[in-house]
Length: 282
Image 1: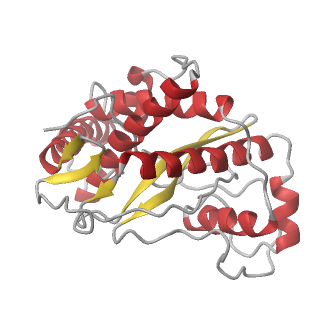
Image 2 (image 1 turned 120 degrees about the vertical axis):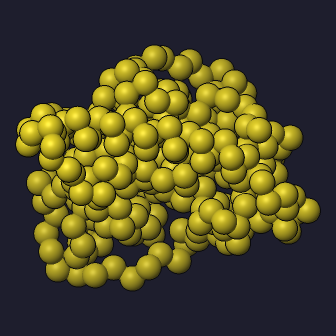
Image 3 (image 1 turned 180 degrees about the vertical axis):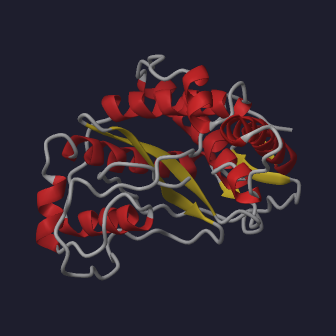
């Protein structure tokens, strides 16, 4: 999932996990294992294909309404900004999040609606929109219900790198500028909460023996960042990579120096990606 608008941040905890082959789980038709639950490649592809079809219908109709019934939008205009990888992120994310809220007895409120998200994504009535609503409501509940993590300069540098990568913030902030941006009272609690969520996902990955088919690059947390008067920004935080490698927050990438933080730095605001409510996919 790509970042959408807003300046904000989030982070990634270091997670050690096994690949499918390493733990003896190597069925080519399985996208991911979470304990005894499997999510099939076919299921992931079907969710994406449905979303793509609905997006294409919506985008074509909107284009022809503006340009005439014979007008033909470009293939790029008809391509939804979501991939099968994004669908898998939602399915597994919902599974892990439900386990955490059940264990910790965290209440979940129905804050985001599938109908509204479907319209926002250009894929109304899609399972993609339903999964997105399920996931983001769980995400918001966990942000509010988990104890916040403590931020350090090293962690902020990793957060910042993910911000830049996700087009949520401009490149070039110094360490001092990162401290200043992340000290914003509207942003700091959300960043600390996402760091805590990463740690909670780490524990679930280890407990449930989560593993990933090598055809997918990673598993990522589809995150939201709310900015006053700015709505929600969306970005992704990897917590399990294809080869079972660790995202190490203790050795962040070097930071470029220069540019000043700007509250006006934003990414494109079109469609993005969301999740699933099911425990098993076949």
